[in-house]
Image 1 (cartoon, rainbow, N blue to C red):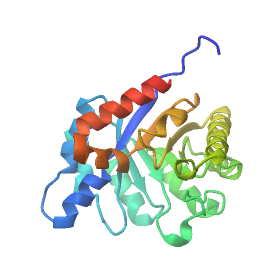
Image 2 (cartoon, helix red, strand yellow; image 1 turned 120 degrees about the vertical axis):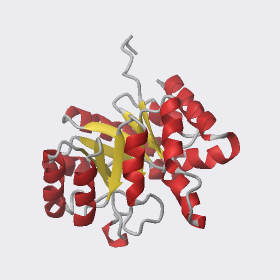
Image 3 (tube, rainbow, N blue to C red; image 1 turned 180 degrees about the horizontal axis):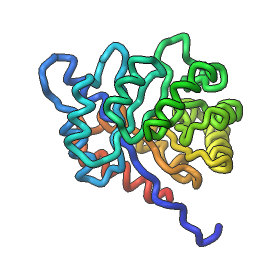
Image 4 (cartoon, one colour; image 1 turned 90 degrees about the vertical axis):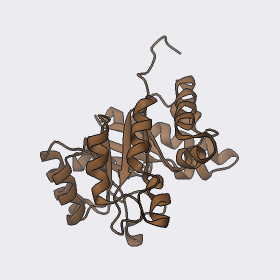
Length: 246
C-alpha cells in the first residue's frame, strides 16, 4: 500500500430515533435538537434526519429547530414526493438523500430503485439541484443503480450496507467486495460515495476502510447504544473505530 492516506471519513449521525422515543409519549422529551448539539460538540460531521410521510419520528418543526441549533450540515432524508420536495425547498438543507418509503417502491435490497424510477426521480433531482441542495440517492450497491445515478446527475450516492450488515460467513466478504467495487465505480464517474444502514461497532471497520467512501451515516445503533453509555460516548467510540480503520 502506498503512503497515500485517504481523507478523513465523515460521520453523519441520524437522530430520528431520539424523536421516536419522544413520540412514544408525546411531549418534548427527549429532544432531537439536543442530540444534534451533542453530535456537534463531539466532532460529528453532519446530522441526518428523515421526515417520513407519517411523521413517525422527526416532525416538520424539528427540521428548522435542528438547523437553528447547530452549524453542522443537515442531510434531509426524504421520499421523492411533492410534499417532501416542497419542505426541502423551504428549509434548504445542505443535502437531501432520496430514500424509498412506500413498500412498493422498495427493491429487494431495501435501496431506492433509481434505475426503475428514472422518470419520476429526474424532475425531483433537478429541482433540488437547482436550489443548491446536494442530492444523494440511497441505493443498493449494484452497477445498474450506480449507472442510473450517473444518468440522473446525482452528485452523491449512499450505498445501502444492510445486506453486508446481515451477512454471515463467506457472504460477508462478497458483500464487502460489492460495496468496495461500487464505491470505486461511483467515484470514477464523479459521484461521491457514502454508505450506511445497519452499521455497528462490530461491523463498521471493514466498511470504513473502503478508500473511496467519503461519509458513513449511522443512526439506530448509536441511539440504541446511547441508552446505555450516553450519546457522547457512543459517537466518540464510533469515530475512534472509523479513524482506526483508515
